[in-house]
Length: 417
Image (cartoon, rainbow, N blue to C red; front, side, top):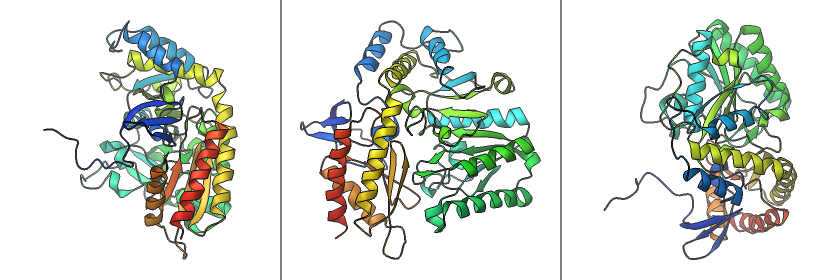
């Protein structure tokens, strides 16, 4: 009898029968408050009626129309709709299926457009699991270990992770930008550097927001040296941070934006957005794929945009995010087990540390497990997997946030003894 790979370790023991909004219901009929959202994917909640209806209707019309062979209306309409919410000047799109594919497409584009071989990524960033994307990932060795050699031409600069360094944010930011300049002097000449790839907030790296000064420093150096600034909005986009795009918190202009996760409320769909001029510098035949821009996924994405806009889910993410962050910080203030709580919108991380300030993986894992036992589904992240992250859907209510915080209070009290 076939079975799943034994390497696929489940974060929770839940076997789901169905989902509705912020809840998952298991095969025993128990309800779980889902603050994982499929790792930030089910932005409109589980099985939002508008998304379900759009997908059902599209399945009856066209399931797959390979978009370099034929064109279909959902893809054309989605492209037009995204033009309404994308940053100014990013008016050309390429669609794929996963975040890793979007990262690799952007990597290919930036190298071809600039004729330069090297890229700079930032410590703690996560960009995917395929070979090139894993080569660009520094949030943990588990993503790239065991199948070296990885892709060459990747250089790593610090991210302003102030809590990790034990500094204030300005000191961490000054250090990160100074080290980037040192990287240019010692490892990759600016003339050989095609692009910066950076997340507006580290995802797998521990839910660490960037800041305005840091991203402005990247933009200034990019403009000075003809380097492209690629913002990986795969986890932070589509309202997740309380702005439509995570980088809008920091007033920075990207050359390329990567999109996926919350784009289609659970259907596989990703993409890259750039200016038509930049996208036109990709080599002919370098963009394509069998399933990219799938008709059903595009229909779901159109419905997702409708729901986000009509139900004011970006505003809800901002309001509920403040509630969640303030609540999580209040809980952390009552224990020495949590050293830092940080976040943007509905991305909130609690970092567990020992009494002497070292990463506390054991307590974080115990907290995540205890929460699942009490009906609150959470995930961990960070290099040491000592950050417990909360990622509720954008439709989460004030009452559900309070319910989660009550459970979290109980959990933190129990694991801190």
